[in-house]
Image (cartoon, rainbow, N blue to C red):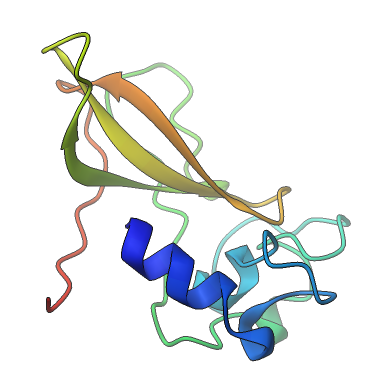
Length: 118
C-alpha cells in the first residue's frame, strides 16, 4: 500500500486540485458508492474517478453493526500492528474524504483484499 499510494500521490495527473494527499478519486471506481458534496472526495463527481484503473468499490466491511457499505472501501495491508498481535494495518477510502487513510483494526474484521503484482 505504501508503494501504491506513494506512486499515485507523486503523479500530478492523479492528484485532485494539485494536492498530493488528495488521491482517493484516482483509486475509487466510477461506481464507488454514496455521493458526496466534498470536493476531491471519492464520492464527489464520480465520473472523474478511477484515473489509475484501481477501481476500489465501497464494499464497506464485515464485523460491526454499521459496516459503511456504499460509503467506504477498506483494504487489509500485509503489515501487523507491532504492538498488538490481534491488530493489522489497513487503508480506507471514504466517500466524503479526499485522501487514503491508514489505520489499524482487529484482524477478525472482514476487509477487502487486493492483490497487486510486485
